[in-house]
Length: 100
Image (cartoon, rainbow, N blue to C red; front, side, top):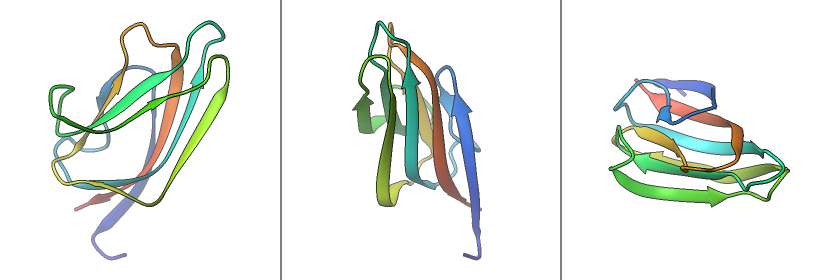
């Protein structure tokens, strides 16, 4: 689509998805956790973990988890990805589309 930038990003720690503060739509989240602890991940509408949480995930211990979000979830104020404190998230890959 014109005006849209497709992308994916790998996270090993919390941070902004794509360009900070730009509207985007998230389509897929894949996580992997270490064996002893479940992965905990939350996506916030904004540029920090204190912004409104739109969605949160807790994966199974020692496994890979894939969350398909159909037509996607729109984050009008940008998307901040927060890995839960003490979480076993080894990594998360997020597939998204960003508005220009």
